[in-house]
Image (tube, rainbow, N blue to C red; front, top):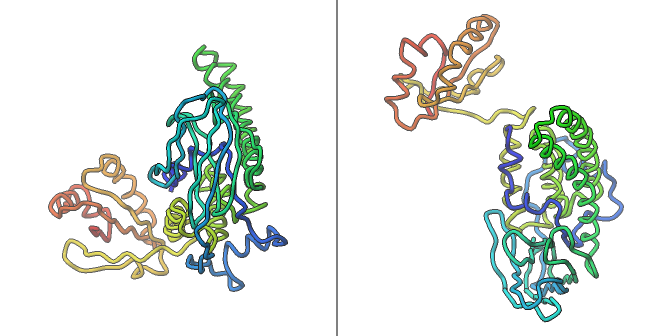
Length: 356
């Protein structure tokens, strides 16, 4: 699952350091240990499934107002951020002092953004009935937003900004050393980068543990490696179940996390039932009790084909000890698949070969 951190929730990546507002949180008095137990499963240790009854909210007005200095008489937009893009709500012309004001009626918590263009904006999280007053400077809304009045989650996001912002100076040093071809400077910056990464990872997890049932925690997840910190992704998704349902970003994250959980390290592999070249149907469960390598490949995949000799050596070395290989081809057409598993390359490589 390497790289999933970059695949999950692309729109949330834009919000990592942004200001956000919401009063959504776990119930006061619930300890971090209790929250983790709730996220990971019930008393029987089984992981929980999504599907709690969502909190029913009546449609209510959210409002955002403030002043953006330097944006006098300029267009200001108000949008909802979703998993695959943004949905426009309103566009206005700021007043002579940069003042702006937006209202919107919603029945679910949403990620919003206010900006002067696609590259210059700040973000908020508002539940129905919540209001925020935010001032900023037009040259960089993202870094200059100032909370005048807003729900508690705004201040939590300010806290996260401080946690993630520690990497900015090191990134600048790394870039400068590369431009100047200063190897010593670059190596020193790499060491400092690694040290700060460890600290930021620790602080982000502590931040999430404080209020996992919050959309700000959902945004904070994007700072954690998906493969290494899968439990935190699952923790937040389960903590928000029944609270954030209906929010497009949460719903997409929950769907992906629950699907990924099926193939997470330590999970039972999902069943695979596919035909072999001779038409015989075999299943992964047929090999229960043995060590099985599931090799996903395709006839058109050069790296897969080049790896064949190595896979064959492993098979020949360990097959007598109960090791099996189940090759699953991703070919859509049968003939390229059959050609690829002919006598030259595959007949003696795998005991079992199937096509998806």
